[in-house]
Amino acid sequence: MKQQHVAAEATHINGLDVQAAANTIAAMKADRTLAKFQFRAKNVWISGGENRSTIRDFYGAGREDNSRGKAFEFINGEPPVLLGDNEGANPVEFLLHALAGCVTTTFVLHAMARGISLRELSTVLEGDIDLRGLLGLDDAVSPGYEQIRIRMHVKADCSDEDLDDLLAYTQQHSPVCNTVCRPVPVKIQRVTS
Amino acid sequence: MKQQHVAAEATHINGLDVQAAANTIAAMKADRTLAKFQFRAKNVWISGGENRSTIRDFYGAGREDNSRGKAFEFINGEPPVLLGDNEGANPVEFLLHALAGCVTTTFVLHAMARGISLRELSTVLEGDIDLRGLLGLDDAVSPGYEQIRIRMHVKADCSDEDLDDLLAYTQQHSPVCNTVCRPVPVKIQRVTS
Image (cartoon, one colour):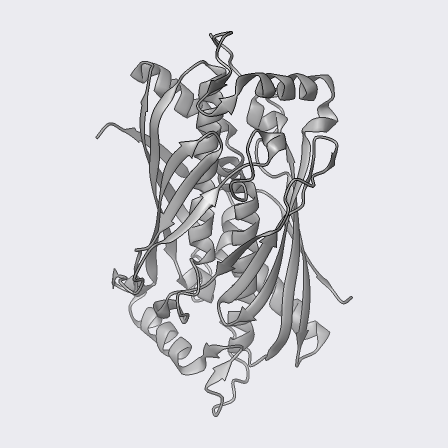
């Protein structure tokens, strides 16, 4: 994290508590096990392309988190053209939401670390998929996204060069962006209990 | 798609319209451009680790979809230990939701194609992340998930061997699973308009 000129008197930058962030980073530097997180989700199939996830607990900073009074719930669905009834956004759309959010939060976090105050930040995402992959109609077609494009609009109290440098850093350090850009192993196991 | 023994009289299997699915596949076989889809999301930063996506339109099956009367909205947030206030699940958790849903729907779809009726299907996901990657504390640490594990519980009217074969096929053909397992290019561009 590139800490250039965080004003000592600023308690919050971009809505983030500067001292709390510094404390977190110092703690993880002192004890790298505090940086180990495990996130979790549970999903239940409903019918057809409809299923529901619940997300609540996770492990991080050396302990089980108990900050969430109740679980978040999200519904996956499909549009009629994909045999559903728009019960929810579909999984590949949720992936775009995850990617948008992660790039944004990574940008906001490292802007804070550099003392850059953001006024506006928004993104528009597009991802191309050839469904012959999913359907197994052509083994030469990858089932996943062929490419994802993000257009970012940002206004801040710094130069365009500073923003471009921050954006390049963000792309390299966003967890979801890195998970998409890099091959990440997914292990699926059928359990009988 | 492996169509083994779809009963001619079954109009729906696993909640999916068998004839509609066959028609879709036949159309995509006859004209491969119908399989080209583009999914989209728009995201606006709110403050700190909070941001909101709207998802509505997409392109597919040769046209712009207009089946959704209003947009889906989702909030990304962060827990207190990550400087937020649990405004929503966080982006790496939404990625698990997307992955769970996609593996599930791919499994359900190809079960239908094989004439397998499912009674129950649920998954539990865990993903490991070392946040020193996000924070830029160690260049040797990848910012994304190190590994994601999925445990699937399924009850169906077929043998365990059939289920294991279907699960292996699912892992190879799920769009989100493939996007995570394979390096997918993400292009980020800053726009000034």
